[in-house]
Length: 345
Image (cartoon, rainbow, N blue to C red):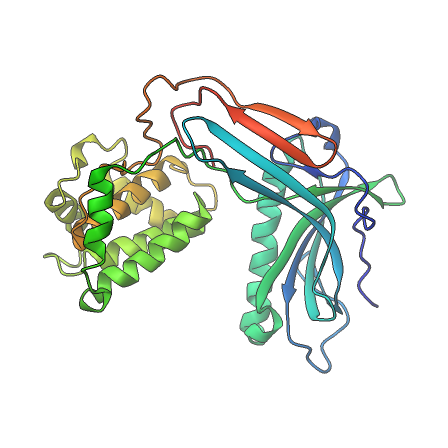
């Protein structure tokens, strides 16, 4: 059996929707059948079944292209928070290339963005099991992700949902003389002389790009352990981290969540498989700030750029909502004239 591309807007002319920014009432999806799709570039393997399953995740090798859609969001520079959004409908991916498509049929709730996040985790776990059973040639890199809503008993495709990257409110920030001096200092350092810090920075980067997820909590802890490996009492990670932060003049006592509890968050994820720990996402933001502080300290960077990204140094910009204007041509301008005082991922 070959792969059936159920994406409903192959001509690119129909309206598409981003499930997370909710251009339409997501409550209308509740109870509808939903087909989640995650596609990977693969290597053709002789004898691999045309279709097989791991749990309820259906896996289908095929040759592209497969149709999907993508939402691009770009934050403008300047003293106001303005986002430009463009949706590309009816995209063709994987032209003439071998692909592996992971699909899950589920029932939509009132919160499709949460549905799709949970389905992504399930699909990735199944593909991970497949890669461990064979090897990584079966899922070399991710090429698309979307979901298709199905109508009635016939389960015909009627609507596609775009799963965009997490959106964060980066408050307006400008380059000061101190920041420019910090960047100039970095040209004098050697990453080869600080291999642990260099490695930690790469783990931190992966976590920061991913945002507050359970996976990136683990990445942040790997970075923190690399940054504190030379401290005394190496078996006691929380004490080691506290000493390193105090050396970097990080105000440990002001942390809303203690280092010990943050280490417990790691244990909940790594040792107990908890994918919805109580300290998320608050704990993630604290760990992120710790990583930034220690990397700057290790690299000798002095900067007035906030350690916590949610810090807003334009004091008058507080507390009002985002204005969103949806245009049928597929372009949205979102203006935040007075944003809230915290990150929005």
